[in-house]
Structure formats: structure tokens, C-alpha cells
Image 1: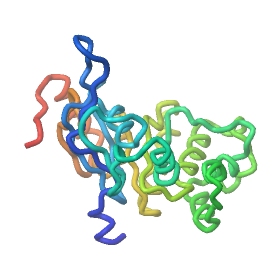
Image 2: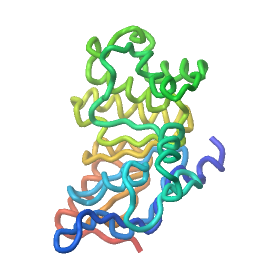
Image 3: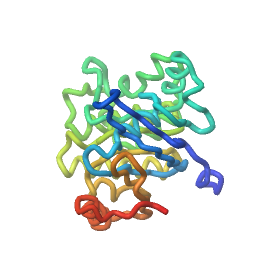
Image 4: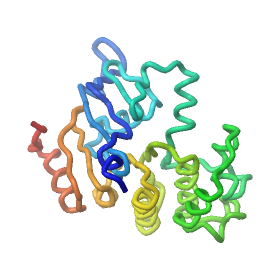
Length: 254
């Protein structure tokens, strides 16, 4: 991996504000957040319930719009795009992994993996897909349908689908929420392995310190604001930081 890859920014938000509702019922889900997600890294977003972590991911990924501020994928300002161009950007430059696997039950594993490319009329890069299938360990399952797979295997298919088009960044929203601890650990290890072996970028929202420990870095939110970053996280260090939020002792970044 080159130095340029390590210092490049895959996605970022600047002075991000998101307000839901108006007047007395208005909720300020994001309150002036500026954060970058570096290319070639696996970053987790954590925070107490209601901290704004899912809102941050949705706005950074162009699934929701900011009330104020800007969101960028690479150097592209999402607010400058009309609906059609934003849809094309999400299709071509962003991958998604959700808590629900969202696989098409009538399609095989191979067909589910290439579905976004097929819908876009893009020809899959066979060498890339071949390597991806090996990374996610699905070589002997390509002709199976989702109902014939375990939950962990289905999420592996979803991960492969998210990376199939070589996106600039993959956003994962509680990707292990429907899995047992063993399957969840395998999927998280897979996400990290895919980042390292393909130089792709993953940004994951999670509430689980064990899940966050699989990331290269954790970004913490509290009350809609950036509340710190942690390099080389461990489950214990992340849990300690989360406990500090519960007791109101967390330190704001300088």
C-alpha cells in the first residue's frame, strides 16, 4: 500500500449539521461534525444511543442530506449533485453492507454478488471477482441460493457484493447485528482482511466494543458531536471510553 493511499481521504464531512423536525420538536442529530475517513483503512463509528452515529454514516454515504455543512466522497461534494448524479455516484463509488443481508432469494450466490454490476450494465472484472470470492471464502457456495446458507455465509455474500464494483468506500451499518458472536467475528475479520488485501476503505457503525476492536481506528460521537478518535483499538479500551460517556466523563477533542 502506498503512502498516498494511507494519506488520501475516501470520505469526509465538514461542519456537518443534521436537524430533524422543526421548532420545539427539532432534534439536532449532528452538531457541527468534521471528520475524515482515510483511504485503505477500516474505521468504526461508535457512541451512545442517540449520539448520531447512524446519521453520520447515512449523510456521509449520500443516503440522507445535511441541514448544513458538506459531505464528500473523495473530492466530490455530494451537495452539488442532483438526484440522478447522486444515485450514479452511490452505485459506482460506494458499497453498502446492512444488518439485514438484503439478498435476492431466487438468485445464486454468484448472481447476488454481481447484481449491482448487472443492474448498472457493467461487465464484472473477472480477476477482481475471482480474488474477492477467495477472500470471502465462498468458492464452494457460488451456485447455492441464500436459503441454503447460514446467516454468516449470507453476510459474506453481502460483503462480496459491496466490494464487487471496486467502490471507493464501503459503509457497513451494524453488519453483525443479526449474527451470533462466532459468525459476527468471522464477518468482522473478513471486512478487515478485505481492506488489507484490496486497499479498499470500510466505515462501520457499531455499538459493540468487540466489533470496533477489529477496526484500525474508532471515531467516537456523543450528543451529535465528535468526541475523539482511537488508533489501534482493543475491546477493553473502547469499552472504557464508552463507560466514560455513560458517566459524563468523556473528554472533548481539542
